[in-house]
Length: 168
Ligand SMILES: [Fe+2]
Image (cartoon, rainbow, N blue to C red; front, side, top):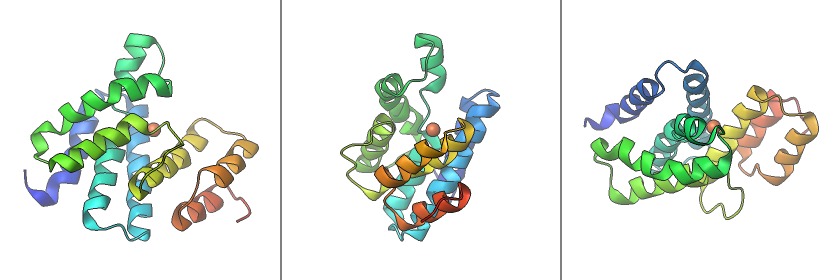
């Protein structure tokens, strides 16, 4: 697969994967846009930036399966079902094994806020929260609690503070 089209190929494949579920499609596009932006602002190296973007595109890949299998997209179900789906999704992309493993790990942990062991993981959590806080109408205290407990990157914090008009 042509290196320079990897990201747009992943985006296109993910849109097809969701079979017209515009909520899921628009959710991942927003999370990817924030993840890409924060990653670049935080000066991630090329490989880590690519890992982050590819993980953010498919982070909710287990949602349709979890809805039909469990009637719920709760984090624990998504994390259980997401890793094999992620591996299968990127099989044809010829990613380095280490990168593919990391992407699967991130998909399998994107609802876990402890043991965050890298900037790719941290930024995925922040990007997903930036979108979820608006989509799920989180209260101001909930958002302020995330600001203090979860957000770590300067760029993520600046975005959070501006979008939700918080004091820095
Ligand atoms: Fe998400």
